Length: 277
Image (cartoon, rainbow, N blue to C red; front, side, top):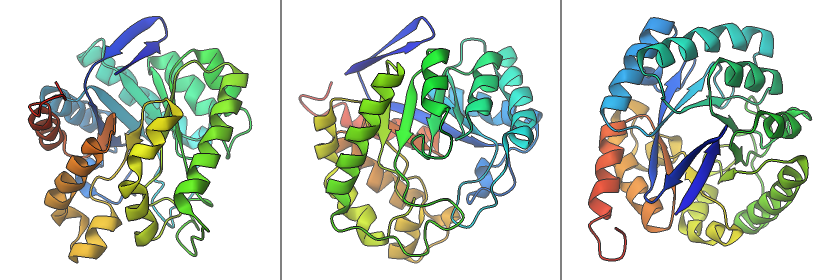
C-alpha cells in the first residue's frame, strides 16, 4: 500500500496499520488511555504491542475541546522518560509523538521516536515543517479548524470536504518544499467539526486517497459516536468498531485507536474480503 522511511529504517506497508494511543496526561477525554507516569506508559505500551499495535502514539498534553494549552518546556519532561522506558522494554518499537511544538518533536525524536503527529498541520508552530524535514521522520498532517481550546465553539464550512482537500493540497506542497519525504494526512474528526461535518468527511473519505498519500483516521470513542448513541466515551467501543469498519472500507490506511485488540480484529476480518488481502 505504501512505505515509510523511519530515519533510514524502511517500513513496507501492505495492510492497514493500527496506532495505539497513550496519553501522558490526566486530561485526556478517555480515562483508560491516561498513563501519567512512565511506569504506567510502559505497561500500557507493552499491552498494546502484545495486542498487535504497529505504532504507538504518545502525547503529553490533551487536545480535547476546551483543553488547556501546554508549552514545550512542560511537555518534554513528560514525554522523554516514557519514550526511553518503552524503548528499553521493547527495543525497535515504532513510536510517534503527538505534538504541535517543533521543540518537542526534536526532543522526542532524539530520544527515539520515529514519527511526528501534529494536530495543527503545522499551523501552531512555524518551525514545525522544516524541523520534521531535518529529523527525517514521517509527518502526520492533521486538519483542525481553530485551536483546541475554542475549536468546537462554532465550526463553519461552506463545503467541509472541499475545504479539507484544499487545505491538504496546500500543506502537502508546503511540506514537500520544506523537505518532508513521508506525509500522512488525517482529516481531524472532532477537531473544529460539527456532527454533520464529521459524518460528511467519513462518507467522502475515499476522496482523500486522490491526494496520493496514506490516510489516518482518529475516530476512537469520539463525540461523533457518543452524541448519536447517547453514550459516554467509556461505552463507545462498539460504535468505534463500526466506524473503523466503515473507514477501512473507504480506504483508511491507519487507525489511531484506544482499543488495539478490537481494531486489529477489524483489520484482520476485512482482509478476508476478496481483493483486500
